[in-house]
Amino acid sequence: MYNKNAWKKYDNIDEVMKFNEGYKDFISYGKTERLVTKESIELLEKAGFKPFDKFKTLKAGDKVYSINKNKNVCAFIIGTKPVTDGLRILGAHIDSPRMDFKGNPFYENSGFVLADTHYYGGIKKYQWVTIPLALHGVVCKKDGTVVEINIGEDDKDPVLGISDLLIHLAQDQLQKTLAKGIEGESLDLTLGSIPIKDDEKDAVKKNVLRIIKEKYDLEEEDFVTAEIEVTPAGKARDYGLDRSMVAGYGHDDRSCAYTSLKAILDTKKTEYTACCILVDKEEIGSVGATGAQSVYFENIIAKVLEKMGHTNPLFGARIALENSRMLSSDVSAGYDPLYPSVSDPRNCCYLGNGLVIMKYTGRGGKSGSNDANPEFYSWVRKTLDDANVNWQSSELGKIDVGGGGTIAYILGNYNMNVIDAGIPVLNMHAPMEIVSKADVYEAYLGYKAFLVSKN
Ligand code: MN
Ligand code: MN
Image (cartoon, rainbow, N blue to C red):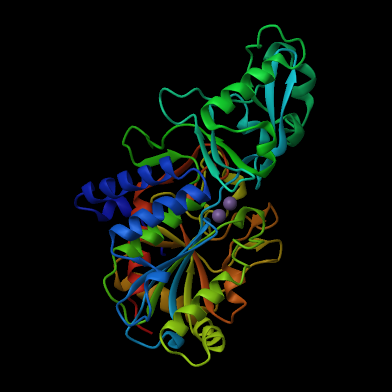
């Protein structure tokens, strides 16, 4: 059954390893949706894609991209067929679980200055204490200037962190459940401990604010209009003695974002208009202006049609979406030998066995999932097989042990054929997630084959 180890297929693994070097660089830099957007623009420009506004008109073969609020990337290669015949869409999300600074973050307590955070997305809170953390984000000042923050990634930078109780005094804490052992309000970041001289009140906080003022020209109040994300510090690394895997932060879902983006970057021309859309806010329900539920995507397709001379671009966009085929590129839960009880061994995915196709996700009775049509699934199956892509079929864990969702159903609402196709991950949503390099590579091959596929 569609479940074969990809490593056995390769005569030479150099290509797989080389591809993953690019991927490691991508996630080592791209710790936030903004940073992923920034490096995506660089990669797109290098591959000959031009910003949407640079085109007066659009025609077959044109390579164009649009950026939404510094957090969405949407790239197209205009096909030789009319756009209203449908697009080939690869959609991934570029937000990952983390902690964000609160609006009024800084406070001093017993000789320390700390920053109050609010976690974003589903995290097991106990995994985020006593590890090196970094700060990334922007502070938007009242005069309109935007100051970028990046602390903790350079070897010369300090790192930050969240403390945990020493084992010697943790008798009560250890009686608590894992969910309650570390509470959301306890996820506060230590920022410093040197007091300013000759000052009694908040002397340590004053000193840290002085450093911030010196380095970034920011006042404490400026942080109310900031977006500071607390992420694990450090680069992605090879994992395993055989270097078969990558350990890093944000494989969910930047592994699929990178492979989707690379697929369109490495595609020359297509029959159906090729599209790669990278969205934000998936981890909190795909809501808001930069989430998959935003009308941004529909509008940008209408704008493409407008530039192609379509007389009714908004209606055309609806028809184009309805006729589209999409791979919702999102990660899946890889089988973990240490936790076999949560997976159905015949219907789960394994690291190293290639791209994971999930007909449905959801929880309980498939609640909240996009259950793809078998007519469409069989076409995907043929497309991947014809391109010699290793792939596997999977569910997201055993029935009734939990569940999850992706952006698939949101695009499915356009009456579009959508199926989930992603990469298996271990430790999903942990500060250090694991993927197999073979799966990253097979996903890339699968996405590339999909973009040039025929009906
Ligand atoms: Mn995801
Ligand atoms: Mn996730």
